[in-house]
Image (cartoon, rainbow, N blue to C red; front, side):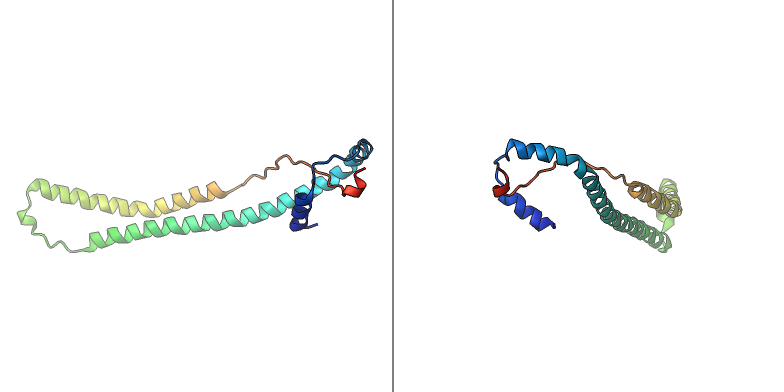
Length: 152
């Protein structure tokens, strides 16, 4: 039975209870159903987990590429800033301004040098966030849908 057939059956169900005799028969029959119900739930869980794992892998790859791109753009921007020749006339700067310019340049160099390590750390964080997903099986309910002519 496929999902649309189950949906149609559930939509056409009524709230009328079957006879007490039929209810008793269903209760007696239930223990024989448990293994196949459990197997079906496990199969569905595995299928669902496979799909989710694929999505998680895609998301992990996307996030890794995104953070690498952002940090590489930052590195390129810093390199460009450091590579630009200074057109300022440093002799017009006070000694404090020259020191500040040197501190700023040193800070940019340190930031640039830290980017490869930061990329690797971000990659590890993303991989750990998406690794080892846990399967959870939630409680289920079983509904017996009995044709009207057999409910009595």
